[in-house]
Length: 284
Length: 157
Image (cartoon, rainbow over all chains, first blue to last red; front, side, top):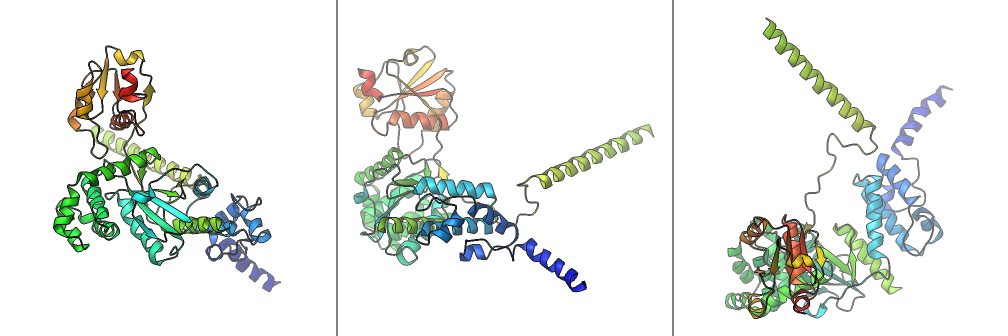
């Protein structure tokens, strides 16, 4: 009798922290690591939300019933990562909706002049990502280098061709000068080196330092200066901005995955996840 | 003595109001399903995507009476050369640049003109410089900003 009573508080503790409540079906590392409130938020969502492709049941049931539906596992992980970060149920539901809006096929696609946009990654990959960025956008200064690393040497290596289009945001101080300098570097075939360098010095940005960074990125001073004052380079920058406006870009960064506007979360984990999802979908 | 009493009473009432308000706020926050955390458990999201500061604008047809109305300022957003070749009678030239913001002097001039509406026409291309300038002006605080559908080409007809 005494022993039974002494077990009760221990059981209550484990029930409270969610350790003995399995996150039914969602056997993914991100979900299994959850405890407490985060676990209960994730449990609710995986047992009520549905994948937008490959299976009609809830995420939880799809994981059990359709092992071939990799999307269900991805979405469970997506939910659990957010729950672990302390996001509430509504925020995660909205994130799921935005992801579905972005990834559902066929979706509305836009035209982009890929021939004119510098590319990194695998040119033959089935996934083409076009990113409209501004060189004076703080968010871009964090996202673009991270995405570049993933595409060149990380989880997305060989799976994606990442194209960059410049979209100077007028409210950013010196946005025109910074973007024009990158357009000049692009005309000299040094866009990525230069762009990453300018982003690395984001907080120390000064127009006067653009030429020095060009030399650091391997461009000749005279060539860079010539490109910077070239009418053709400015025209290419205006063309890039106009293309963005035509495609409905109103903020940076804006990504298009295989021509579809991506309106989901822009953290690198989610980007890697959705691009891998697209890669699997085009490979099917 | 009476003065001291008044001060003490006022102070007491003030403290009472603060304590009751704080208790009420904390209770409501505690009851709310998604109450605000009293101590932040994670970093705030400092970085957010950067929007182009644009506002909502309304398109008008080239034959809309608003274009010729007495209290309307008509703006030609095309380049200087195009403006020189042809422009609508009475239009003001403010060339639109896709890279640089509309100069502050121009915005102030329009804002201080006393006009009831600002109608912009541009090149009528895709994107239309008139629409883009109208959106920028609206984004910078001007009200009742319109653009002519089809731009200068449609107006000429």
